[in-house]
Length: 249
Image (cartoon, rainbow, N blue to C red; front, top):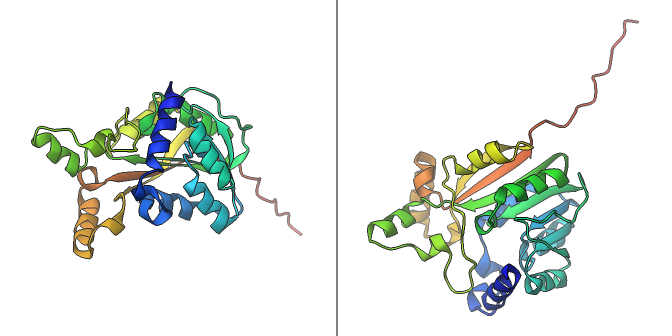
């Protein structure tokens, strides 16, 4: 049933002009992850959708990209872009990837769509190599636009993700501490090592508004952040080789 739902979502999304090309679909989550991933990396993109981000990694950084998604329609589009794809409900199923076999896992605006994000993160911890990273982007559910909607007696369609061609949000996180609390209580294998407050698409704003929002991000990120970008690593650092012993001559 969930697979059929997301087949419908992706079929509708990719029929809309607003999703016609990468430029029209650009979001800061892709830049965040792109900048953090090295060339020739083996990347697992959880909930890869139609593979537009994976294609960016393949074309610009010569990465090998494995895509997981529950939608057969989306996976077919991702395969056309060169991703190696597998059917997977990341909320409940094991990732079809060997332990400690990938250089990075990306989870970009997907955990708010799944019933058990803790399971997905534990699987991410299992498949990354020692010293590797998990990159997560989440929408901030308490950002100012959503609060103003509440004050006027309505729920924002962006909060619920009910706009045409979008899949419903079923989990909600604030910027301040919700995700860190989830990781600390449900995913002992991982720790958050970096968090950044961001706008969803800074290019959508004029220069003056962009500067004002950037100031708001610095002063009050829980109010002004539209996205939160997280970098996670294994709780136990990768073992380091012993230091060489220097003996007196």
